[in-house]
Length: 278
Image (cartoon, rainbow, N blue to C red):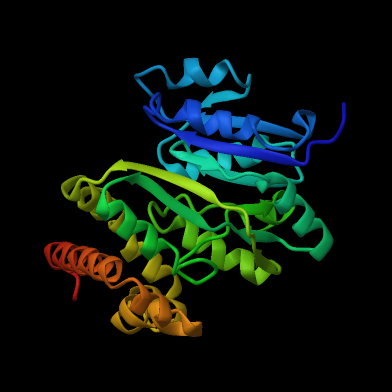
């Protein structure tokens, strides 16, 4: 049996709508099928997610209770030299596997940030995509393609964190080795934007912020950047000449800052209700 280059770990829960496109995007890659494997780690879906996934790969498992545990389960069972971890509503851009393997092999990288494009319908999706484009390769981003050996060495994802576990994993990965940025992209399908659903999702994952901040300390410089007003609401959008894009797209910039403001308010309210200091 030839060695596996990449294990693609997809975490799912009731994703029958998205999983076909996700898996099809993998099959369309210009990369030998015998050089990668697809591992589905499902969390007790009640729809046809596992049935659909099993048509594409025999490696379909059930494990929970949260995304961190699902990812670790997949990493432990992977045979690939590298791990690409995905959510079910993501699809791969052309040439992604070929570029990521080649770049990591030739440059000795432990991981790669992969630029993410938000797709869907309506103005607010365009504003979300515009916002996401500012984060690539910053501390707001997180490496998604990683060397399996390194992932195991650093202990995988912290299963005590739910929401910021990718930030925590990324920080430990950068200590262990060099991380680069890919040019190929991942598409994240957010469908038709719904503000209530968007804020509900943000609120759910924000519950894990306190544990993440406590782990690294409030005075930690990266924590201050990830949660502080100065960088999260200004610096990341202005640094390295990115401010020119704000001037070039004033409508998208306005929509982006409106969403950031609303998310910030929700975050502050949730901290007040939990008894934390704002």
